[in-house]
Image (cartoon, rainbow, N blue to C red; front, side, top):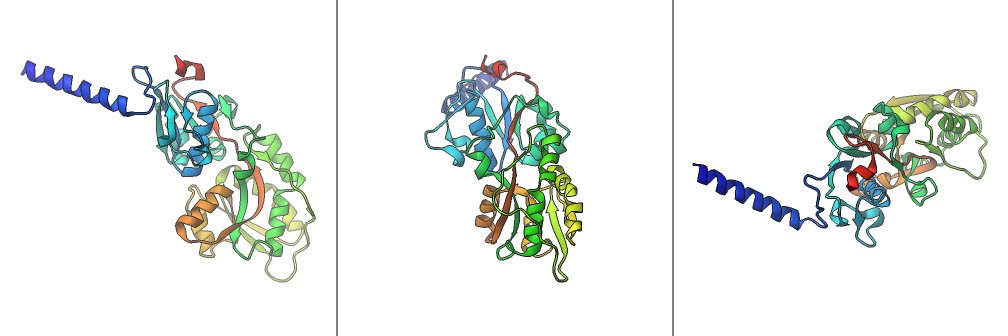
Length: 286
């Protein structure tokens, strides 16, 4: 029995070694760190680029904003990339070495946002490509009430709230053109908006009075996932939603045959790399 056990152990070790060799750039670390990233395609690419910027991995040339973990060309520190649904990332921090987390989920998860070890550059192309938008059904983007909603969210009141509340985790975007909100006309004065609890619903709460002063009633319905706000918008249950960036919206349309469009860009949420079991990026490189 002992001989069989020894042979089984040797075979297991050999298989594990072969698996490691098959991975691109399998590092020399004994176990390798685990870094959790969002599993949806657009946010995963951003997360991998952030890890590359920190010198933890290297992606294939040209992978860019389409990258997946299969595009990792070099992994010298033997890091295991763990793909997870974005909303669950804050709760997994005790079980991984680090995690790349969306701003809204970091806030709603009660994470100390000042603890981020790295963030996306707010001056990067990502700030434009991944701007959070007010989404509506195609054809509604220029309606009076939707334009009133967008301009209220782009107002100085909303901007000041964002800047003073989120410590750089949410960054208001500069806007150009006419920002004056016109008073409501006719009977269609209720605006039903789907939003994630934080920061989107919190920001919307700041503009209720602005819209009320122009004759509009803002109703906010909170959602805790990335799917239902678009389902509800497409089926007419909502007038608009405010929870997603433009790239995610485009990907959702492509996969679901919907025709949802952006009515206006509001803010950018840099992804952050947060510590779990390891508190320092350099510790992952040892």
